[in-house]
Length: 140
Image (cartoon, rainbow, N blue to C red; front, side, top):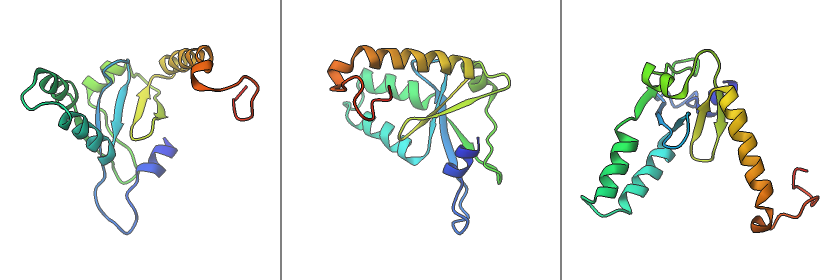
């Protein structure tokens, strides 16, 4: 939570209210969230689809139909609506995972399973990633 606070707090001189876009992940029992960069990425995805197409309408509904604009309080905290908490299965603890222009919120147990699955998939596909086992920076 401290890293989220540090990364998402408005500058002391700015005084502007910072908000996060937050919606249920489309493919995981987690929440996706981010700021203006995430909104711009979503807008870019939609702009690449033909106006009035089924694909554009479906993506718009899936992303913007469930989005919540969450304001951070003075201490960098947010209150998650019940629907978002229920989707992710939050009860007491939340794990924050940075993913570039967005971050995800998971229950600690679900994220640990997701992290393990991702590591196994990367390990299995090293030949496609041009990572040699034991090479510097490989993490092994």
